[in-house]
Amino acid sequence: MFKELDPLLHSELRLAVMSILVSVESAEFGYIKKETGATSGNLSVQLDKLTQAGYISVEKGFKGKMPCTTCRITPKGIQAFKNYVEAIKTYLG
Amino acid sequence: MEEKKLDVNESLELISRMIRNTQNKLEVNAAIPLLVWGYVTIAVTVAIWILVHLTGSNVWHYLWFAIPVLGLPLTRLFNKSSQKSVQTYIDRVLSYVWWVLGVSCVLISICSFFVPVRLPILAIVLLLMGSGSLITGLVIKFMVHAIGGAVSVTLALVMLLIPETLDNQLMLFAISFICMSIVPGHILYHKAKSAKEEVENV
Image 1 (cartoon, chains in turn red, yellow):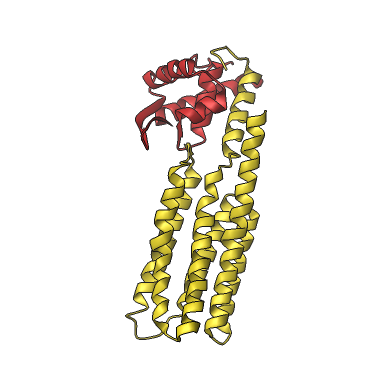
Image 2 (spheres, each protein chain N blue to C red):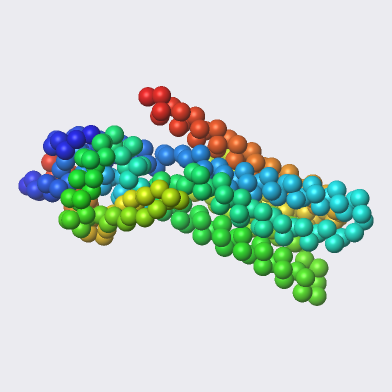
């Protein structure tokens, strides 16, 4: 029986962001942008969607005098990621 | 990368690639603490050796406290220009390990002034620092650092066993810091720099 894939995670950029955040404690916007190769605008939109779903938390601060956005995965996000991987397994049989 | 829908295999490939890239990330600033603490310790050790030999006074041993006094601000200064853009769980654990070991070294050094027996303080500090390097090297799978740590632990035990003279104690102490800090620090720095240049050239 196939499990339904979370539509929020079943998108290339959002899944890439969640895969990065699940393996670290926190990552800065610039790091995620570099690793995913996304544009700043697109990445901001996708981070907003993940934040609204409660999958990640975003903290805006400063690194020296430069503004710095730091992202972290939430427990709800970790659970959603686990569920997504479990759901994928059902497709692979 | 866009907001494109993936098939199941693409999803799995993407997840494993992102996790792998993040875990293999080597940052140049990972080498900074090793180099700063290594060079500061060697410089202070050599300074003490020269000053004690020149003056014949043991008062110069107070200079050991210059290691944390110089090491802490220098590490902060160098890290400021290249702060880590990603923080892993291993980073946090290792940072706690080094804080505990560092504070223990300072406390035992202070205590050595007040206890009635003479403590082999250099051997104790070396044992703590060597253990920290061994743990760090094994955790981050950087064997040069782990081997440097093991060499330092061994030399700390040698320091306890051989007759104690200023020359052999300071020489073994300096050799240990070359093995566990300076050599791995330079190797890590060049590895991370090459990896960064490789990524930038792709």
